[in-house]
Length: 64
Image (tube, rainbow, N blue to C red; front, top):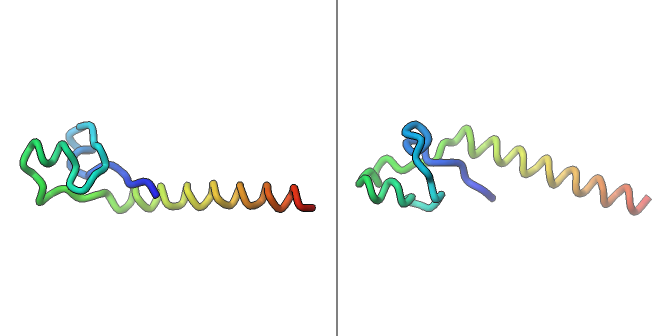
């Protein structure tokens, strides 16, 4: 599962390495505010589920 950018990194338009804590927050000494955006993470989760659904539908079609 992929995670979205850190909220602070996104706001400041910084490159995020998506680690916990991320490299940008470590460099800027803002580890306490290093949090992933829940809305973006949810969006990625929905996209992942949609991709899986398409894959499974393709497999069902091949079996028919």
